[in-house]
Image (spheres, rainbow, N blue to C red):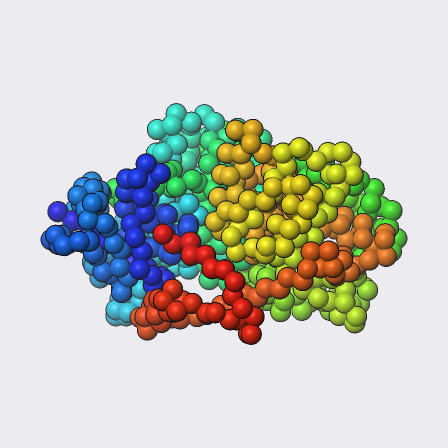
Length: 591
């Protein structure tokens, strides 16, 4: 018999999560729960069985992380683990054996085989690439691109798509079809075609964008056309070495835990090379099994986005003295965002031409991440030349957006927290003035997003609800509230520059956000104010709120120990003061 072990990126002592009925979740759902709710990335490996202690708690220690099961649930935990056992043929092989399996597979091309032969004597590289498969969860999978089970490559894409196809088929949804979107990254088109071929090989209809498109457009199309599912080949704002696979369900949101768990289990039982059904991509296009989508979906999407602007005519009213600089950081926003802003009434829009060119190497920036002020060097240079009022930047898959406002002789980067507060106040105020604010209006934010947003919402009679980080939780909460008639969500956002507006997407949407940010800036300009002035006015009303994100890099085994000690210290001896300011309350989200 074998059991699943757990390998963690972050070091924490964690209890085994329970279901709402009080029972324990399955090991695969445990993995999803920890990743989604606690930001702990887990890889499930097949390990040799061992005896279970009979003392007060069951304990499994892997990479210095402990998972505990109460004595009263020990029997259930053992049963769950035994239920997760898969055939020995699907167990994870030692890295060298897995490497040789790949190296000798007839599925590899000559070029791919040469790549593996080039590392034949490098045990460290072999271990890195083949020690475990990439983990699939509600956020799909993501990793650096190369051959190997722990890398993103065409074989991994085919493998996960086969598993996803089988789940779709079991739901009887082949005719509803799937949608495939991809970004500007190296190999994204190749991976998209590989996924389309597998869907088609399984008899599932495929709609694939003819060229790279924004993530929110994928969510929109799934919902608009009633598709069964969708995928996006993207690694968002990661550096050039990365790519990924995001999976979406029929509501246009990323997969919920139950479906993600089913896909992960199916992947574990599928042979990497022998279990794949794949059609020829060009033949599928000829037969109509795969259809390319283009301008028609762009137009419908943009029409819907522009209808969300609450104050039509605002931009046109100041168009002769209002200037915007935009950069897509080489990504998918390069076509639709300028078109949307032009249709909004903007005349003076200047794009950073070097970054309008699709480039999977992101050669003009260190990182294509709009959260980083240093990514805007070229945009700021152009903005100064054009005397722009604001700068807007979207990440490569156009789900995140950042805005910079003119400040003296330069430009100030407005945080995701504060951009969301500005948008929330603008949306509520505009809807109120138009008599369009629902009686049961609700706004959503994540637990790590500024509490200033709650003050803004509640001062207008809008309920603010917190969710865990991730738009899948916001989409799920929106669906639940509206299905029960318990609230109408008018805005959702998180501090990491993601905003969801309207009812037509269930994910971060930088296209719609770009429209509303631009209109909002024009609205304030018409009143002689900048966005920074507007923010100051909100501070005067609700009090000053500040926040800062600090990234701590703790690599290797030593880093795991450091993280464990840090988290333990925070719980055992939490800070009583932060820079001479007293800590008045604490909340620990771990049970």
